[in-house]
Image (spheres, rainbow, N blue to C red):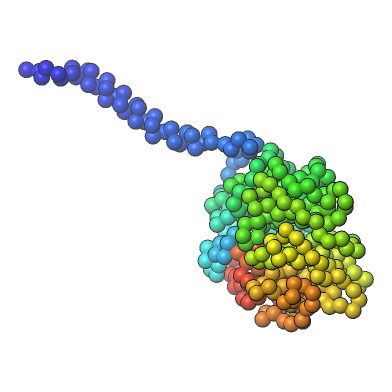
Length: 408
């Protein structure tokens, strides 16, 4: 006998099928929404086919020729990338073999090939590696005759296992700078890629794709020159000219580029300024003007010091024939306890100031480094070879030599 409330078998089967379909839709919805989720202020970028990393290939490049690391960058203190290169000049071209090196502990390196890592060139390669995250990296492949004019860009978001080729021309805009991104000006040697060089706009390289897009809000400065990565406190710095007065000014954003605060530097007898480098530690900030002097290519022209995070500035240094240092090679270093360090352009010595850049004492680093450069993982510097050696210092003071695989 059938129970009074029991449903016929066909009816029960239909309900079970319906419940199964409903469950399948609920499971699929998050996946579908993830694929369709596009920020409203981002350009709708077409997908690019991924290229798997090619297997290592044999090479008949003469091992007597010296291999070296030509580019290094760190996303943080542990995660970094380096570009290993081994080139030999032939009768009509230079034959090269390159490999990407990857570290997740700051010391040990994994070796990977990438598309086009074995090639022939008509001159020295000017390739560059840029860290955008723990496993996000771009390789800019440069034309041998033009240092800034790149042939193309490769991007990987899985530590070099697969790659996509992305365009260099900026597209769309974004309202804020995401974590891991880099900032650039369109006017630094890229007039063949970017049409709008005089609009005062800035370009963001996106960490999730390697693509470049315009920042929606830029500081009101002409010829803007941004620091490519943020300061330790997350602030983004840009130098340029006040369009109303023509005076040098600096801008800072503490909300990922959504808004900018611009302050003018004290009026000074400006020489031909090639660069205005900004560095800071805590509330101590420095703007260092670099340009040619009578007998120096990268002269230390002027130093401006701020003790309130860049709100107000005072000039503490002005170049003159009887003052030292005369030159600066690489980035200025804001050290602990108010120390400012500038490395000499041509010799592995440094000059240290403990009074805001008013006076300097000459000294030597604990390693023979030159041309320091700041990254998200601390400072990097090189020493002449062959082969060229690389050094790293988190605080810019205590340098340690980096050890790379000798023969990827």
